[in-house]
Image 1 (cartoon, one colour):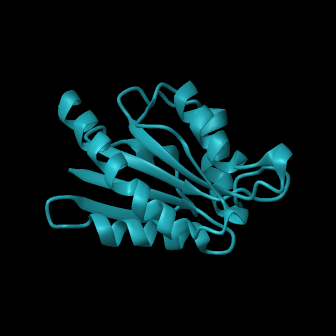
Image 2 (cartoon, rainbow, N blue to C red):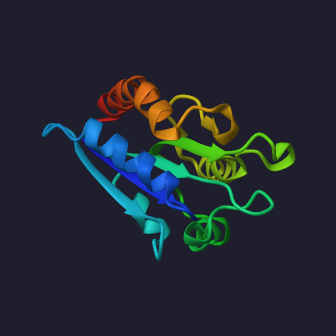
Amino acid sequence: MRLTLLVGTMTGTAQLVAQELELAWDDGELQVETLLMDKLEPSVFADREAAYLICTSTYGQGDVPDNAKALYEALCSRKPDLAGVRYGVFGLGDRTYAETYNFGGKRFDEILGELGAQRIGERVQHDASSGVLPEEMAEQWGAGWLALAKEAIAVST
């Protein structure tokens, strides 16, 4: 099975989460690739036999991070058919910004769903003010999500 982690980050925290997940998941059977969203095109979702995990923070007034803007805007404007794509979302945010809490992950979740992709599991919303490190939360959550992803891939192939 192939799994691609797509990282949207401003300060590197989402990248740390993705690296932690890659270390935990890349066991020889599972091929894990982590890509920063810089300069990615919607064609990154071309492999319908893979699963994708969006790992993104929220920036500014509920925006996706700067390095994720081009991909997000291309998805919104080009509207590619993503039927057959399976994905998950691990969002990072801070609940003290209640009106825009975790909107980076929410925005990707909404556009991918609108384009026909199927989400695996629930969208995760890490809260920076919770006192729990995002990579610790990801590690705890990751095994369950990975099992769901493997099941989703097996059903569709």
